[in-house]
Length: 361
Ligand SMILES: *Cc1c(COP(=O)(O)O)cnc(C)c1O
Image (cartoon, rainbow, N blue to C red; front, side, top):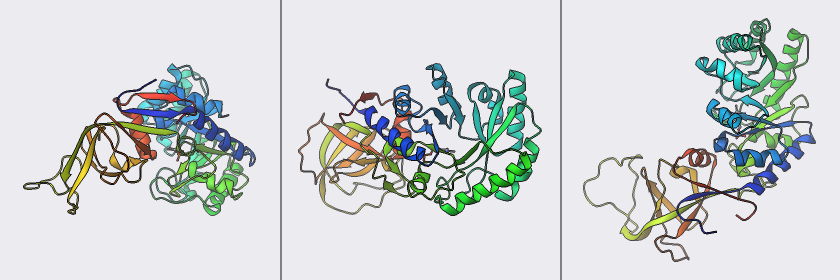
């Protein structure tokens, strides 16, 4: 089948394979893997590919994505990853079995909503071990638990942490051991064991694979590793996973040789800071049908290393193709790999149709 126009190609078989390898590796260390669906807006075909690889529980940061999953008939256990909005407490309880939390006010609203709906909602208390995104500091955890324990309708299912997202803090044996020590303290207060100790996302795979994950950690929440086979925090491909899972194939709409230095009086460009432009003479450039409405230039990596991205406005991305061995014509396609940022954006663009393949990418 020939596909025309800019498309996102998704290799479902490789995503299933990545999932299976991650699930099996973690199972050897008695760690459950939660499949994180926010990287691809919870697109049902990709969720199914994850489930085929052995995932049984799902998680997403956005309630809209969770509702999409429910509309498509996914009945799995779902955890909401972003701290629930106070204003959405009722919908969160109705759609999700569990949520990550760091605010008493929010947990109290979840409790009220759960009571009203005759449900019990699981909460994971988030502990900030240094990355400075969400979570209470270790010394505040006991106080938080004491406040939450008497609340009806919510059950403290455990504690968790997040790393590598704001401060770029790497998961290590040390900061994960700290999480486990907190769990022990909290177990004394609760008088029962914590069911879940959730030790981070894709970047924690490195710690598990090295055999350094503290034994008490029994869950990680993985998106990027399954989807792209990469680990942004450690800035590396994960050698035992597939990377060729998504390709953004963009159609060339203009092909012309132009000077490298713009002509005329320069103001600020519409979509980026004014680039520093060196004069490299006249170069062959391709404009592809893709823009900031679809993906940011920093989210894509041309699969031909001779191609350089010059910039993008809302609907045009400009590529320097002067050094390519291949000769292109207007209407040809240029393949772009995606990083996690690029994947998130491309999957939420309303303008890029998806093509699902099984092992042909
Ligand atoms: C996005 C997210 C994850 C998954 O992160 P990956 O790097 O994609 O594995 C896990 N936990 C939380 C709280 C998140 O927001």
